[in-house]
Length: 388
Image (cartoon, rainbow, N blue to C red):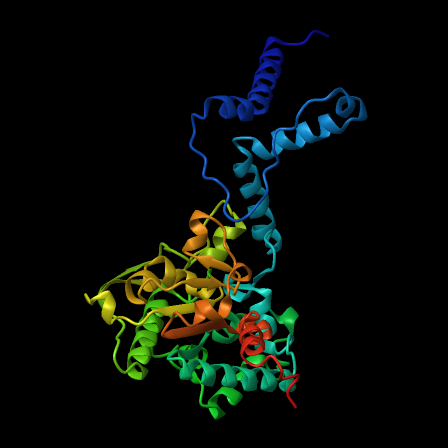
Protein backbone atom coordinates (compact mmCIF):
# COMPACT_ATOMS: atom_id res chain seq x y z
CA UNK A 1 0.00 0.00 0.00
CA UNK A 2 1.62 3.29 -1.12
CA UNK A 3 2.13 6.40 0.94
CA UNK A 4 -0.25 9.19 -0.07
CA UNK A 5 1.07 12.53 -1.24
CA UNK A 6 -0.75 14.28 1.64
CA UNK A 7 1.11 12.16 4.21
CA UNK A 8 4.43 12.95 2.54
CA UNK A 9 3.62 16.67 2.61
CA UNK A 10 2.65 16.46 6.29
CA UNK A 11 5.89 14.67 7.17
CA UNK A 12 7.90 17.21 5.19
CA UNK A 13 6.22 20.08 7.01
CA UNK A 14 6.88 18.44 10.37
CA UNK A 15 10.51 17.83 9.43
CA UNK A 16 10.99 21.43 8.31
CA UNK A 17 9.25 22.70 11.46
CA UNK A 18 11.45 20.63 13.78
CA UNK A 19 14.55 21.64 11.83
CA UNK A 20 13.59 25.33 12.17
CA UNK A 21 13.13 24.92 15.92
CA UNK A 22 16.54 23.27 16.20
CA UNK A 23 18.25 25.94 14.10
CA UNK A 24 16.37 28.92 15.60
CA UNK A 25 18.70 29.36 18.62
CA UNK A 26 21.76 29.24 16.35
CA UNK A 27 20.13 31.69 13.90
CA UNK A 28 19.29 34.16 16.68
CA UNK A 29 22.72 33.72 18.22
CA UNK A 30 24.38 34.65 14.92
CA UNK A 31 22.01 37.42 13.80
CA UNK A 32 20.68 38.87 17.09
CA UNK A 33 17.51 39.90 15.20
CA UNK A 34 15.28 39.65 18.28
CA UNK A 35 16.24 41.62 21.37
CA UNK A 36 16.17 39.24 24.34
CA UNK A 37 15.94 40.52 27.89
CA UNK A 38 19.05 39.43 29.84
CA UNK A 39 18.79 37.48 33.07
CA UNK A 40 18.79 39.33 36.38
CA UNK A 41 20.97 38.58 39.36
CA UNK A 42 24.48 37.29 39.82
CA UNK A 43 25.48 34.29 37.76
CA UNK A 44 28.79 33.10 36.36
CA UNK A 45 29.45 32.93 32.63
CA UNK A 46 32.36 30.63 31.71
CA UNK A 47 35.11 31.89 29.44
CA UNK A 48 35.86 30.36 26.06
CA UNK A 49 38.26 27.46 26.78
CA UNK A 50 41.68 27.35 25.16
CA UNK A 51 42.26 24.40 22.87
CA UNK A 52 45.14 22.07 23.71
CA UNK A 53 45.80 18.52 22.54
CA UNK A 54 46.04 17.21 26.09
CA UNK A 55 42.64 18.69 27.03
CA UNK A 56 41.16 17.32 23.79
CA UNK A 57 42.28 13.72 24.38
CA UNK A 58 41.26 13.86 28.05
CA UNK A 59 37.80 15.13 27.07
CA UNK A 60 38.08 18.30 29.15
CA UNK A 61 38.04 20.65 26.19
CA UNK A 62 34.80 19.22 24.79
CA UNK A 63 33.09 19.47 28.17
CA UNK A 64 34.27 23.05 28.76
CA UNK A 65 33.32 24.09 25.22
CA UNK A 66 29.84 22.61 25.58
CA UNK A 67 29.37 24.47 28.87
CA UNK A 68 30.64 27.71 27.30
CA UNK A 69 28.28 27.49 24.32
CA UNK A 70 25.31 26.59 26.51
CA UNK A 71 25.87 29.45 28.96
CA UNK A 72 26.58 32.01 26.21
CA UNK A 73 23.74 31.08 23.86
CA UNK A 74 21.86 34.23 22.85
CA UNK A 75 18.45 32.67 23.44
CA UNK A 76 19.42 31.04 26.76
CA UNK A 77 17.55 33.63 28.91
CA UNK A 78 14.28 32.59 27.22
CA UNK A 79 14.82 28.93 28.12
CA UNK A 80 15.80 29.83 31.70
CA UNK A 81 12.70 31.99 32.16
CA UNK A 82 10.44 29.28 30.72
CA UNK A 83 12.02 26.72 33.05
CA UNK A 84 11.61 29.01 36.09
CA UNK A 85 8.03 29.91 35.13
CA UNK A 86 7.15 26.22 34.79
CA UNK A 87 8.24 25.46 38.37
CA UNK A 88 6.64 28.63 39.76
CA UNK A 89 3.27 28.26 38.00
CA UNK A 90 2.82 24.50 38.41
CA UNK A 91 4.57 23.72 41.70
CA UNK A 92 4.95 27.11 43.45
CA UNK A 93 8.72 26.51 43.57
CA UNK A 94 11.14 29.43 43.11
CA UNK A 95 14.34 28.75 41.19
CA UNK A 96 16.30 31.39 43.13
CA UNK A 97 18.45 31.06 46.23
CA UNK A 98 16.76 31.67 49.62
CA UNK A 99 13.51 32.90 48.04
CA UNK A 100 10.29 31.83 49.75
CA UNK A 101 6.90 32.12 48.05
CA UNK A 102 4.35 33.12 50.67
CA UNK A 103 0.59 33.15 50.63
CA UNK A 104 -1.05 35.22 47.87
CA UNK A 105 2.35 35.22 46.06
CA UNK A 106 4.02 37.55 48.59
CA UNK A 107 7.74 36.97 48.22
CA UNK A 108 10.26 36.64 51.07
CA UNK A 109 13.85 35.69 51.67
CA UNK A 110 14.32 32.97 54.27
CA UNK A 111 16.36 35.01 56.79
CA UNK A 112 13.54 37.54 57.22
CA UNK A 113 11.13 34.80 58.20
CA UNK A 114 13.70 33.19 60.51
CA UNK A 115 14.32 36.49 62.32
CA UNK A 116 10.62 37.24 62.77
CA UNK A 117 10.00 33.77 64.23
CA UNK A 118 13.15 33.81 66.40
CA UNK A 119 14.84 30.94 64.56
CA UNK A 120 18.25 32.67 64.35
CA UNK A 121 18.32 34.13 67.88
CA UNK A 122 21.92 34.54 69.11
CA UNK A 123 21.03 34.87 72.80
CA UNK A 124 20.30 37.73 75.18
CA UNK A 125 23.75 37.80 76.75
CA UNK A 126 25.56 38.26 73.45
CA UNK A 127 23.26 41.10 72.52
CA UNK A 128 23.62 42.80 75.90
CA UNK A 129 27.40 42.55 75.64
CA UNK A 130 27.28 44.05 72.15
CA UNK A 131 25.17 47.00 73.33
CA UNK A 132 27.55 47.68 76.24
CA UNK A 133 30.45 47.79 73.79
CA UNK A 134 28.43 49.97 71.46
CA UNK A 135 27.68 52.43 74.28
CA UNK A 136 31.38 52.68 75.11
CA UNK A 137 32.25 53.30 71.47
CA UNK A 138 29.48 55.91 71.14
CA UNK A 139 30.66 57.73 74.27
CA UNK A 140 34.24 57.74 73.03
CA UNK A 141 33.25 59.06 69.61
CA UNK A 142 31.19 61.81 71.23
CA UNK A 143 34.30 63.11 73.00
CA UNK A 144 35.88 63.39 69.55
CA UNK A 145 32.94 65.31 68.08
CA UNK A 146 31.31 62.32 66.37
CA UNK A 147 27.71 61.26 67.06
CA UNK A 148 26.78 57.60 66.52
CA UNK A 149 23.21 56.68 65.55
CA UNK A 150 21.75 53.18 65.34
CA UNK A 151 19.04 52.77 62.69
CA UNK A 152 16.95 49.61 62.53
CA UNK A 153 15.23 49.17 59.18
CA UNK A 154 12.08 47.05 58.96
CA UNK A 155 11.95 43.50 57.64
CA UNK A 156 9.62 41.73 55.23
CA UNK A 157 8.76 38.95 57.69
CA UNK A 158 7.87 41.29 60.55
CA UNK A 159 5.90 43.61 58.26
CA UNK A 160 3.92 40.89 56.44
CA UNK A 161 3.69 37.98 58.93
CA UNK A 162 0.22 36.97 57.71
CA UNK A 163 1.58 35.76 54.38
CA UNK A 164 4.36 33.54 55.77
CA UNK A 165 3.73 29.99 54.46
CA UNK A 166 2.45 27.37 56.90
CA UNK A 167 5.54 25.19 56.42
CA UNK A 168 7.41 27.62 58.73
CA UNK A 169 4.84 27.12 61.50
CA UNK A 170 4.31 30.90 61.87
CA UNK A 171 2.10 30.40 64.91
CA UNK A 172 5.16 29.30 66.90
CA UNK A 173 7.13 32.50 67.50
CA UNK A 174 9.91 32.88 70.07
CA UNK A 175 12.07 35.77 71.27
CA UNK A 176 14.01 37.53 68.53
CA UNK A 177 17.27 39.43 68.13
CA UNK A 178 15.28 42.55 67.32
CA UNK A 179 13.23 42.38 70.53
CA UNK A 180 16.30 42.11 72.77
CA UNK A 181 18.27 44.74 70.86
CA UNK A 182 15.32 47.10 70.98
CA UNK A 183 14.89 46.61 74.72
CA UNK A 184 18.59 47.17 75.45
CA UNK A 185 18.94 50.19 73.15
CA UNK A 186 15.84 51.82 74.64
CA UNK A 187 17.47 51.55 78.10
CA UNK A 188 20.75 53.02 76.87
CA UNK A 189 21.72 56.56 75.92
CA UNK A 190 22.67 55.53 72.39
CA UNK A 191 20.97 57.51 69.61
CA UNK A 192 18.44 55.09 68.17
CA UNK A 193 15.85 55.16 65.37
CA UNK A 194 13.51 52.16 65.16
CA UNK A 195 11.83 51.99 61.76
CA UNK A 196 10.91 48.36 62.33
CA UNK A 197 8.29 49.32 64.91
CA UNK A 198 7.31 52.53 63.10
CA UNK A 199 6.56 50.72 59.84
CA UNK A 200 4.44 48.06 61.55
CA UNK A 201 2.55 50.66 63.59
CA UNK A 202 1.77 52.73 60.50
CA UNK A 203 0.99 49.89 58.09
CA UNK A 204 -2.78 50.21 58.34
CA UNK A 205 -2.89 54.02 58.29
CA UNK A 206 -0.27 54.81 55.64
CA UNK A 207 -1.80 56.27 52.49
CA UNK A 208 0.55 54.19 50.34
CA UNK A 209 2.24 50.79 50.85
CA UNK A 210 5.37 50.95 53.00
CA UNK A 211 6.51 47.57 51.72
CA UNK A 212 6.10 45.96 48.29
CA UNK A 213 4.68 42.55 47.57
CA UNK A 214 7.45 41.17 45.37
CA UNK A 215 10.47 43.04 46.76
CA UNK A 216 12.55 42.48 49.90
CA UNK A 217 13.37 46.10 50.76
CA UNK A 218 11.17 48.92 52.01
CA UNK A 219 9.13 50.57 49.26
CA UNK A 220 10.53 53.64 47.55
CA UNK A 221 7.84 55.64 49.35
CA UNK A 222 8.76 54.14 52.72
CA UNK A 223 12.46 54.61 52.02
CA UNK A 224 11.98 58.33 51.40
CA UNK A 225 9.93 58.72 54.60
CA UNK A 226 12.71 56.97 56.53
CA UNK A 227 15.39 59.17 54.95
CA UNK A 228 13.42 62.29 55.86
CA UNK A 229 13.22 61.10 59.49
CA UNK A 230 16.95 60.31 59.59
CA UNK A 231 17.77 63.80 58.32
CA UNK A 232 15.49 65.44 60.88
CA UNK A 233 16.96 63.35 63.69
CA UNK A 234 20.54 64.23 62.73
CA UNK A 235 19.62 67.91 62.64
CA UNK A 236 17.99 67.63 66.07
CA UNK A 237 21.27 66.46 67.66
CA UNK A 238 23.65 68.53 65.52
CA UNK A 239 24.25 71.89 67.17
CA UNK A 240 25.84 73.78 64.30
CA UNK A 241 25.96 71.90 61.00
CA UNK A 242 22.70 70.81 59.37
CA UNK A 243 21.81 68.18 56.78
CA UNK A 244 19.91 69.67 53.81
CA UNK A 245 16.17 69.21 54.10
CA UNK A 246 14.58 66.50 51.94
CA UNK A 247 11.62 67.92 50.03
CA UNK A 248 8.95 65.44 48.90
CA UNK A 249 6.84 66.58 45.97
CA UNK A 250 4.12 65.19 43.74
CA UNK A 251 3.39 61.47 44.10
CA UNK A 252 2.77 59.18 41.13
CA UNK A 253 1.19 55.78 41.70
CA UNK A 254 1.76 52.74 39.52
CA UNK A 255 1.36 48.97 39.50
CA UNK A 256 4.51 48.77 37.35
CA UNK A 257 7.32 48.40 39.85
CA UNK A 258 10.38 50.64 39.87
CA UNK A 259 13.78 50.45 41.53
CA UNK A 260 13.86 47.69 44.18
CA UNK A 261 10.09 47.34 44.63
CA UNK A 262 10.18 43.98 42.81
CA UNK A 263 13.80 42.98 43.36
CA UNK A 264 13.00 39.43 44.50
CA UNK A 265 10.77 38.83 41.50
CA UNK A 266 13.45 40.15 39.16
CA UNK A 267 15.91 37.66 40.64
CA UNK A 268 13.47 34.80 39.99
CA UNK A 269 13.75 35.45 36.22
CA UNK A 270 10.18 34.52 35.34
CA UNK A 271 8.55 34.75 31.92
CA UNK A 272 5.44 36.55 33.23
CA UNK A 273 4.98 39.27 35.82
CA UNK A 274 3.50 38.57 39.27
CA UNK A 275 0.59 40.98 39.97
CA UNK A 276 1.79 43.74 42.30
CA UNK A 277 0.34 46.34 44.64
CA UNK A 278 -0.30 49.91 43.54
CA UNK A 279 2.89 51.62 44.73
CA UNK A 280 3.77 55.28 45.28
CA UNK A 281 6.73 57.12 43.73
CA UNK A 282 7.21 60.66 45.05
CA UNK A 283 9.27 63.35 43.40
CA UNK A 284 12.02 64.53 45.75
CA UNK A 285 14.80 67.08 45.98
CA UNK A 286 17.16 68.58 48.54
CA UNK A 287 17.08 72.12 49.83
CA UNK A 288 20.23 73.91 48.72
CA UNK A 289 22.86 74.20 51.47
CA UNK A 290 26.56 75.06 51.44
CA UNK A 291 28.69 71.96 51.95
CA UNK A 292 30.63 73.79 54.68
CA UNK A 293 27.40 73.89 56.70
CA UNK A 294 26.73 70.16 56.31
CA UNK A 295 27.92 67.45 58.70
CA UNK A 296 29.90 64.62 57.11
CA UNK A 297 28.02 61.38 57.67
CA UNK A 298 29.55 57.90 57.41
CA UNK A 299 27.07 55.05 56.90
CA UNK A 300 27.79 51.41 57.76
CA UNK A 301 24.85 49.39 56.52
CA UNK A 302 23.45 46.42 54.66
CA UNK A 303 21.52 46.56 51.38
CA UNK A 304 18.72 48.64 52.92
CA UNK A 305 20.90 51.70 52.42
CA UNK A 306 21.61 51.07 48.74
CA UNK A 307 18.44 52.81 47.59
CA UNK A 308 19.22 55.95 49.58
CA UNK A 309 22.82 55.90 48.43
CA UNK A 310 21.82 55.50 44.78
CA UNK A 311 19.50 58.51 44.78
CA UNK A 312 22.15 60.70 46.37
CA UNK A 313 21.65 60.82 50.14
CA UNK A 314 25.36 60.43 50.92
CA UNK A 315 26.50 62.59 48.02
CA UNK A 316 24.00 65.45 48.26
CA UNK A 317 22.96 65.49 51.92
CA UNK A 318 25.71 63.74 53.90
CA UNK A 319 28.53 65.93 52.53
CA UNK A 320 29.88 63.16 50.28
CA UNK A 321 30.14 60.75 53.19
CA UNK A 322 31.18 57.17 52.50
CA UNK A 323 29.01 54.05 52.56
CA UNK A 324 30.71 50.99 54.05
CA UNK A 325 28.65 48.13 52.65
CA UNK A 326 28.49 45.44 55.33
CA UNK A 327 31.54 47.14 56.86
CA UNK A 328 33.55 45.74 53.94
CA UNK A 329 33.51 47.44 50.52
CA UNK A 330 33.80 51.25 50.61
CA UNK A 331 31.60 53.29 48.27
CA UNK A 332 31.75 55.38 46.14
CA UNK A 333 35.52 54.70 46.11
CA UNK A 334 35.08 51.06 45.06
CA UNK A 335 33.42 52.11 41.82
CA UNK A 336 36.85 53.15 40.53
CA UNK A 337 38.99 50.54 42.24
CA UNK A 338 37.90 48.03 44.90
CA UNK A 339 38.83 49.17 48.41
CA UNK A 340 37.78 47.56 51.67
CA UNK A 341 37.57 48.68 55.27
CA UNK A 342 40.35 46.19 56.01
CA UNK A 343 42.65 48.31 53.81
CA UNK A 344 42.31 51.51 55.86
CA UNK A 345 42.96 52.83 59.37
CA UNK A 346 39.40 52.50 60.63
CA UNK A 347 39.79 54.88 63.59
CA UNK A 348 41.30 57.67 61.50
CA UNK A 349 38.60 57.37 58.85
CA UNK A 350 35.72 57.23 61.33
CA UNK A 351 36.95 60.32 63.17
CA UNK A 352 36.89 62.36 59.94
CA UNK A 353 33.08 62.41 60.22
CA UNK A 354 30.61 64.25 62.43
CA UNK A 355 28.00 61.47 62.35
CA UNK A 356 28.17 57.68 62.00
CA UNK A 357 25.04 55.75 61.03
CA UNK A 358 24.81 52.03 61.78
CA UNK A 359 21.88 50.68 59.77
CA UNK A 360 20.56 47.13 59.60
CA UNK A 361 17.37 45.33 58.69
CA UNK A 362 16.12 42.82 61.27
CA UNK A 363 17.22 39.81 59.17
CA UNK A 364 20.86 40.84 59.69
CA UNK A 365 20.73 41.59 63.41
CA UNK A 366 22.31 38.24 64.21
CA UNK A 367 25.54 39.77 62.83
CA UNK A 368 25.01 43.45 63.71
CA UNK A 369 26.99 45.66 63.03
CA UNK A 370 29.11 43.50 60.72
CA UNK A 371 32.23 43.67 62.91
CA UNK A 372 32.31 47.47 63.21
CA UNK A 373 31.49 47.59 66.93
CA UNK A 374 34.16 45.05 67.86
CA UNK A 375 36.77 46.77 65.69
CA UNK A 376 36.20 50.19 67.23
CA UNK A 377 35.94 48.79 70.76
CA UNK A 378 39.21 46.91 70.38
CA UNK A 379 40.89 50.03 68.98
CA UNK A 380 39.68 52.31 71.79
CA UNK A 381 39.87 49.76 74.63
CA UNK A 382 42.67 47.33 73.73
CA UNK A 383 43.21 46.18 77.32
CA UNK A 384 39.55 45.41 78.03
CA UNK A 385 38.76 41.72 77.75
CA UNK A 386 35.38 40.09 77.50
CA UNK A 387 32.79 42.09 79.42
CA UNK A 388 31.14 40.57 82.42
